[in-house]
Image 1 (spheres, one colour):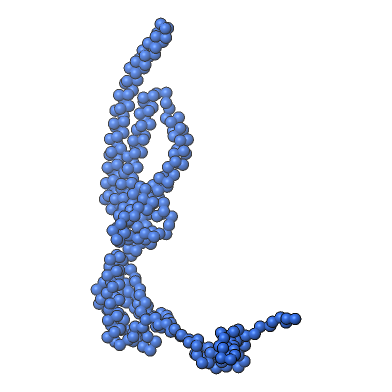
Image 2 (cartoon, rainbow, N blue to C red):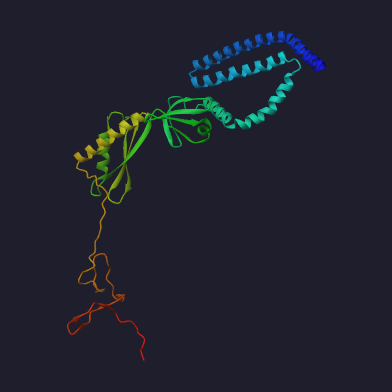
Length: 329
């Protein structure tokens, strides 16, 4: 028992001596880590201000955070080498290199979205405030974060789309240019003058609020439909969705009023339904022509004949035509 107690006391004494031996290193490591924290804060501030001045707030936030955490990670590596002198930076880097493979597999989606977000912010196919269409979602870009792109739909909803999906899918940027063209098909009657209708439509759109004068609106005969001649009307507006919707409503109202005042018919689809009475007098006459049924020189034989047998005033029910019967002996 005395031997075990002696061993325990020796261990405690060695721990205390080791603590006093490592205490100066802990103080130095704490000071060094605080210096790295200061450098990380300064680097983050500098990167953030640099990109803010260039009008890149999303890229500023992403790269500022990356610079800060990179410096902090480097500071932790230096602190580890100070506290434990036996630890070599090369060994730590080698360990991190092997561990980064496992970390990469574990956080594959996060890293993929982060890199996609960085590329989106560097290339800038669209910016904050642009109106885009990604897959089934359409709206205004609120921000591009490290993991996802946030858009606000036109009906007031927020959609969070992973950056990897935005980067790999096709994206339509509705506000990429100064003007945006819209179109609508208008049908007129076959008896109306197509050229006159086109002129009336173009005149109705001249000076209409929200419709650009250059390029001017145009009306083009487009299709000979079943019950109308379709004219495609095209006009240009501001690219924002609100301007497009408001201008479309004004255009349709102006076209309807102008065509009505000009006496041009705007027909609607018409269907003709023929109803045949199957109890006509000529039902059994295959040589006579009925509406929708062609006459034939050699009418086909009827499928069956009805026969009424009258015997002594006893009216029997109609019977089918006689069929071949077997003789009875």
